[in-house]
Image (cartoon, rainbow, N blue to C red; front, side, top):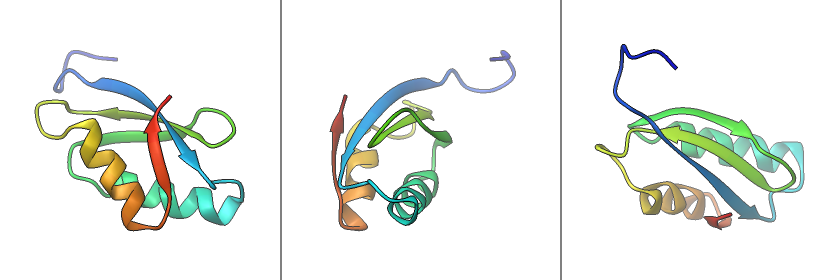
Length: 76
């Protein structure tokens, strides 16, 4: 990563029930829509790799975004 923007933190979120393409898209969109999220990418079965600005949001904010669309999440 370049030094142009804020230092980003990364976390792998495990998302229970995210086992179809539609579910993955729904959860990815929800997490990507959180202010402070720089990127969201698949990290394996039922997992997302999220890069975010820890000065702006917390992992709990990411987990809450997943819960709002009907899935359970935690740090993997």
